[in-house]
Image (cartoon, rainbow, N blue to C red; front, side, top):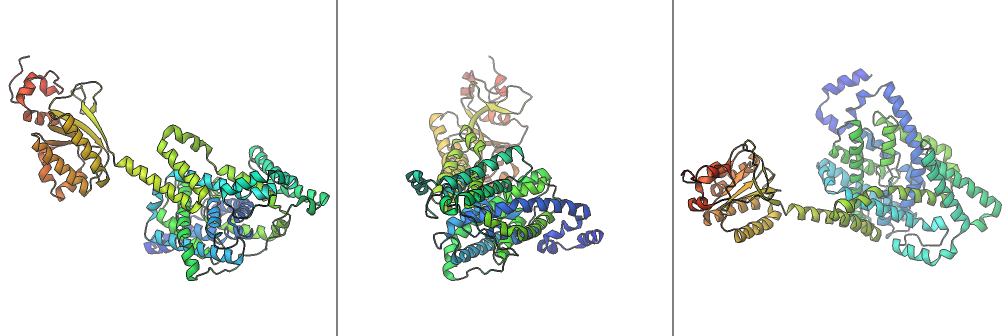
Length: 600
């Protein structure tokens, strides 16, 4: 069977791979890989069981919807994505985004809420699919890692804030804004329920201890068991009327039921902007995670194909009671570590999850809400990247500002927080690129070296200015460069000849080309010229095609390993050179620009 598939793969047209990308890896499946994938899938199913329930709670959905989101979307994402180890399903950030997006329009957990969540999921899938088919995978590169760290930390704090009422047994309305929740908590500290808090705190501590001392055991399952047994004991001993410990309730056992998103104009209009946000957030998660694992596995990731896989998983999942899903870092990392060889592991995980759900669904009736709150506190703490948050101020102040704007913006308005972070990050980037670095340089004193270094206290030639320019010359940088050259003319008018070390110029657009031509004309008006050393061929061709080279002059371009001053020197003022004691260049030592030998 494997040999037949391998032969088919060799003659398979390219368009077939586009429609059915799983045909690329399917020939590599054999008994050995299937065994490894099955074991990895079983591990993944055990991990997603408590996570799915927790994430659905975050999203404001009934607990079973978190498990549904880990079934069909995981299979579709594995078969139509490009990563061999990425596992799709519910995630923390997506769950909190879903809740924040839909809760203003419907009561969490209500049929209207669920219907709008399915609409949001469908639209997210459509947007992801369109971006993938349009080969726009490059878009996620514009979302900086700092923005993701800030958003994730903000989402973690929102998760913890949403569970304060369940952790301490307080009566705080669902959906209360984060800072208002903190205010209400401070006002009602005296109303904390000791029984509820005991269950939540015990669950939290148990999870921490198991994760630290027994890392191979699923710490969430262990913590849930400890919290559930404690809650059962307290309820039996004191009574529910005294403890007020409520449980999640039994989960429906079975396959994900068919569902239908709300396609009314009102629902589509209301979910449009949230769908765009979740689209970018989900794609950023999926591509970032798949690339991170690919660095370990050595696999090549096709970002556009990953967009298609994620889009299909959400689009189809919306008809199988699934809410918006994405790549999960925890489950994907465990999937790789557990020995998964192909995407079949994610398929196995979904199938095993169905079997496990059939067996343990009734037991959810004993799972306390307080224990879930303890688990979510643990999840929230693990999401905050304390290492990078503490490191950023020492490395880059602008990135630190981006981090805190994203984090605080997420706490105030999750939907807009990430966009504020992205916008500010791009603004800082544009600001940096719009100010190319210009450094005064001189040739290396070693006559056999063609390198140009910083002045380091050496005097410059009174007639020639040499500058190294690092950065692209585009419309955003032109104003800054014009200002720099104008200051140079005003401060150093005697240096009429300007030599640009151009190896660091990577790109020139129309505005930049016009600027260079104008700079060349201005230098001629001053009685000098504009020269370039080691200009890239691509930039030279751009200037030629636009006829800007007519002003600059090809004879003013010097390729690598040449001596520009051997040509420029003859154009200098003979009288100035005669009385000059600087003699910055080797050619100055022997004769004057007119060829006359120096006498001293």
